[in-house]
Image (tube, rainbow, N blue to C red; front, side, top):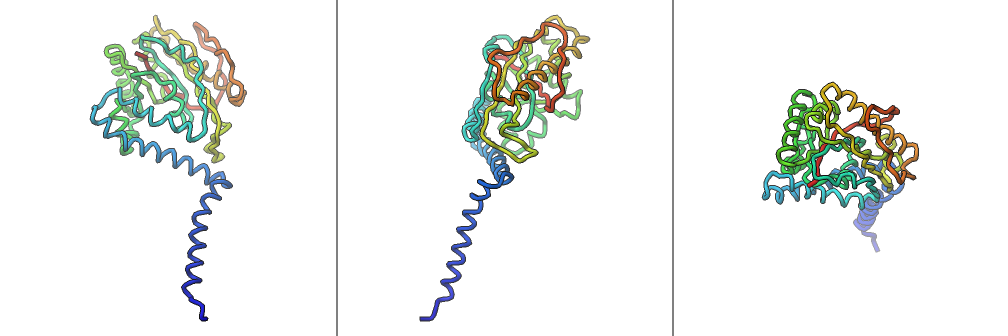
Amino acid sequence: GIPWPGGTMDVALLHGLLLLLILPVLLYRHSATFHYFCKVTFFNIWVLTMATLLSPFAAIRGRCVENMKLLCAAIRPLKHLYGIKIKVMGAEHLNLKEPYVIVCNHQASLDVMGMVEVIPKRCVPIAKKELLYMGTVGWACWLSGIIFIDRQRTGDAIDVISQTARTIRNENVSRRNWVGGRQGVCMTLHLLQVPIFPVVISPYWDFFSIQWRRVLVGRSGLPVLPRIETRGLSPKDVPELTETVRNIMVDVFSEMSANSCRDWPAELPLLPSTGATKGTDGTWHEEDTTGTSD
């Protein structure tokens, strides 16, 4: 019989469709760059989707600190989906009724997975103003009581932090400052006279690298270091306080870097009661965090 031309085209089309289905799977398994961008894209889509779904429920309650529970619950599954084991050490230090400040370092967006594990109740981030304009993500953050500041205007940012500090005292609401600029927060602390708890997020080098386009399974450690007292400090003590906190965190970060996050110490290092410690250079970004537990 005479061959049907359409049959050849159908077979070719079928092969093309199969190739389109198989190609992404092959790239995901064998291309580190494609694998990296897939996981980063999934992370962003997850956050956007959760913010879109949860915002109506948060809007019913109105803007309040309690909505932070919804955001934290939406972020926690990501550690399981990415195969990242998170170990919090020294969490007992945060079992306080009084207001306190948490200061943590910042490396990448993955930090949120660790922070939701250690963030205390009634603790609300202070975020950069740009986050407010990220669609439903910004709306969800606003409904959760997050305070937005313009980091380009240092004076205005410090005013917001100072106002937040008064709220901590008056309403027993904690604030987690997701901003750079330790100086502004420390200037506020000497007025509050509240303790500081440094939290160090371990390096991601074993499983995450933007430079090398790598996202693998791994584990992350978050040691909560013993409190640093600020009671009795004056404005002239702020620079020394700032350097003390930074050097302590850099020392712990460097130690964890040397261990490649494989063997974390069972005991947390003791902090000096006064004076600054000698720090080592490290590649990281500092973030300032304040908080209190109910």
